Length: 229
Picture 1: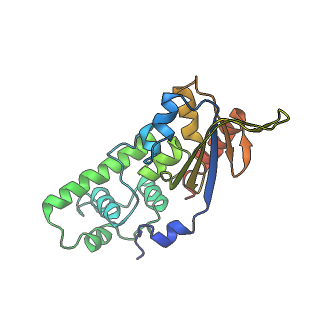
Picture 2 (picture 1 turned 90 degrees about the vertical axis):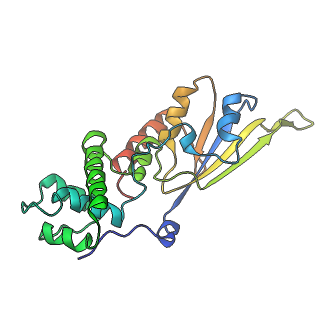
Picture 3 (picture 1 turned 180 degrees about the vertical axis):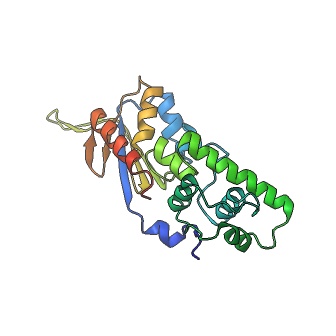
């Protein structure tokens, strides 16, 4: 039987990357400095990930679900449609015999730990039923627009440059370049815009300008594809 294995470094490396550039005309704004002028830029500064969400589906999650779904291996009932959907979504093969599955992957685990696993499985399913997602990755896809935190952040503060003939050669302001895995953080920028409506900024993804309307459309499209990565 195949069990879910956490993504390796190689798995991360083959994901595509998105380059998002943000231009802030006024670089004296304190909120701009707070979020973008720091060496430790993170999407969590504005939209923190709830602590109760697990980082990524893995062997521990499967043990928790097996414990919860089978009531410590006591239940002989077949898995429900919801439970089957949960396993499929996490990439775990649906067991033919749930009790054998439970005993196979929890062999040697003491009762105290099994109780903790049961509670975790219960919480994971509660998250799915109430919020629509299981883990941090799904939360990030929904609220940030990208499944993981930023992997690269460059900040360039520029002064206005005018040619001798009076032509504007370079705009003044802050130019921030963010690199993310899989998709750009458009959902995050929607929240940023709502929180700080006085801050003007222009955004482009992979060199293409993104308008407010297009940002709205792409955020919805990303939401529809939130389990693709």
